[in-house]
Image 1 (cartoon, rainbow, N blue to C red):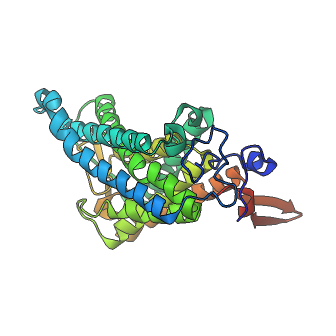
Image 2: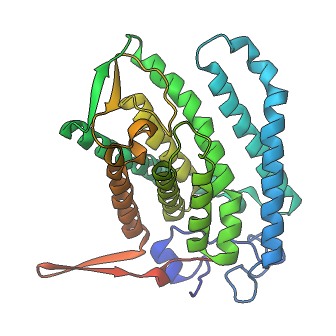
Length: 337
């Protein structure tokens, strides 16, 4: 597949897939060194695997060490319901942030090119697009299931909805960022450079699913749906060339389920005030105890939003010819290096 440089017309036509890849010698793209899209400058397999291994090792170490170092600062709040979960998510997120920074520094790479979580990847489109993608991908399917009776709401203990939603947001935000940095941050960039975006999407999505194997109620259906969610979030990252967008889509996707509909998320349920949404239909459709994200309705929602993003990014062209719509897949219009 032909690649383009940032100045090429083809890149500007789509403009949503990263053009910030490092040349094989590890120089920063901002330097005068040849761009990674130039033939013959793709990083070697050995280099890619070595950097992936270093990142995985440092991340694992950081997630293990960070809670041990930071937990005393959260211990005073341990008696409050839910704060232990919040503390663990924040500490793990801090660990992965540090591990990513150290790995990038070690290999002489910049934060913005290695993660797509820099200031240049933050803007109105990634923020609004990411939140909207995550919101609509799960809110519409879940609302439809409620309308049909496949999901139903039952009474729960009273309380403050705003306080509960705020607690959920504080808990989910660092957890979502940690997962995005781990799977679709530097690791995704390395895979995309060496083997292309398709391989990066597939490999990271499988890994994303496997990371949820220990969640309560994990099943083949649930893990397969988490992998599909990984594909969806990777498409968000590529469409906006921004990990900010993927993080916000991930956060919105989980927040809608937990704070708005009061369902479980990836098998984890947090008590919410006033009402709780439970499955009344088949698990293949509703997701069962895992949450709506594991059902066929959510799968359809993610696929529809992914298609809309593909049109937005210029990977799919739709033309009207009389009463007929011509849909054309144009992968040559996107960068994949």
